[in-house]
Amino acid sequence: MQIPSATHLRRALLRPRGGAVAAARGVGICMCSLARRDHNPTPAVCAKAAGTVAWQPVAGAADWGLEVDMEDAAAGTERNLRGSGVAVLLGQESGRPVPCCPHGPTLLFVKISQGKEEGRRFYACSACRDRKDCNFFQWENEKVSEARLSAREEVNRSCQPSLSHRQNVERYKQFGLLPLSERKFCQECQQLLLPMEWGKHSGHQVLSDISIAHLQRPSQLLCPLKNKKTNAQYLFADRSCQFLLDLIIALGFKRVLCVGTPRLHELIQLKVSREQESCVKSLLLDIDFRYSQFYTEEDFCHYNMFNHYFFGGEAAHEICRKFLHQEKGEGVILVTDPPFGGLVEPLAFSFKKLIATWRETQEEDHSSKELPIFWIFPYFFESRILEFFPSFSMMDYQVDYDNHALYKHGKTGRKQSPVRIFTNISPSMIVLPVEEGYRFCSVCQRYVSSGNQHCEICNSCTSKDGRRWNHCFLCKKCVKPSWIHCNTCNRCALPGHTCESAKAGCFICGGAGHKRSTCPNLSVTERAGKADRNQKLKKNKR
Image (cartoon, rainbow, N blue to C red; front, top):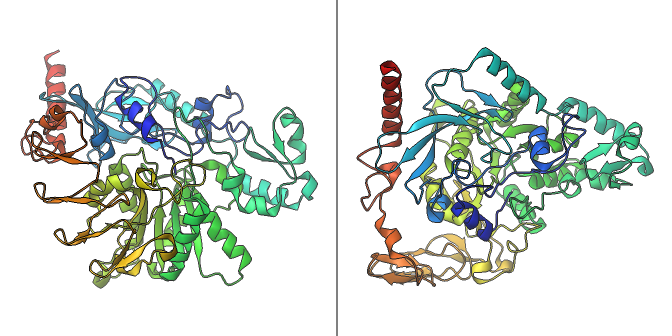
């Protein structure tokens, strides 16, 4: 999981131009031998070549000179302090083929401006919001010449890894037959080395004596990105990973579809290798192609969760379909840990397609059944997730990460990890570890953190961040302990906040009580449709 720090996230969101916080696995890692061989080994180029990408918090905001409000960005809504922004449009394509970039089908966005009738649609990369990583851009109604299409296809081909998944599997088999003294791994190229390749990497940092234990824990062998100025790659701590696996087994699941959770996948694979009759199997879907060096095509699919794109084509899609369809779809759970900077809408869209694939096995009388899901995400995205999955609830369990200084277990106050588990499984069925301070609330019928005290007025354990929240009688709800009620804003907020921000109201009409997405005056779709009509009128006049 990629976690931008709060400081960097805030700076990126308020920066008018330049790099914003990206969140993707492996960006900036040189993969010379896995990618095309004629490139300049810089982070941006290698990231594209390896098929590993970055996602900025706001679609296109940094590139198009837009500024966004931190609170709206956290809620998955793009709003600009200067009165303009970008929104993603899903399922609203014109019917023509969707253009593709090296990371699969692009997404359709619309540029909106407060109080204006025009908003122009355009296609951009689903995964990269920094045009340094993927500079694809095309207006929706733009006529693209054959020459440009051919050039684009050539670029897409050149950005793909030079070795296929099957070739990497064959290399792995050869590597496993080597004596321990000849098993080497190039840290600079992030590649397992065969003896005939040693000369090409003589000037690189190379690890020797790669044991079977190393090969079984590739997330520890592969180097995460550590450039904290732009992005960083973080993985589950052993504590959280083991808890998830124990919980999955306790709930009776036999198969785990790991979407962007490589450490959980490798822990399950490790369990399978140690126990001949292991009751759990897993399939990893991840955009980090480096994992193809360690897993077969039946265990790993190169996948972009922002556009539901399988890089391996229909064959890879069929592997996922068969995995979901085993035992008529029974006993499987989807566990996902998306980049925090990614928009909720595309993620939910992709997850619903995976759910639809799973539903193909369900009989008509069981059509109301849901695919069990663990969606691991920060608690402040709760309203956005519930918008797309109303049956979900948020658990109090704090997920921590191995190589993040702040998101560690044992922190207190505001330093606690904000990452939670959202699930459609009944909270009463999920047992949290008492030894870590969690307790069972007999009223709410679920486990909560020790600081999450039950509010008799709200009739709920209301805390989201692990601290004890206070009830505000004016707001008629519990709020964070650091907040106070502001009579000007008529709501609770941090002391010293700017009251003017509360007067902004709806992005479209300025009214209070609703946001742009639910504005009764003008929806994004209506705005985009009117913009298209205006563009056609302008062309006709010419």
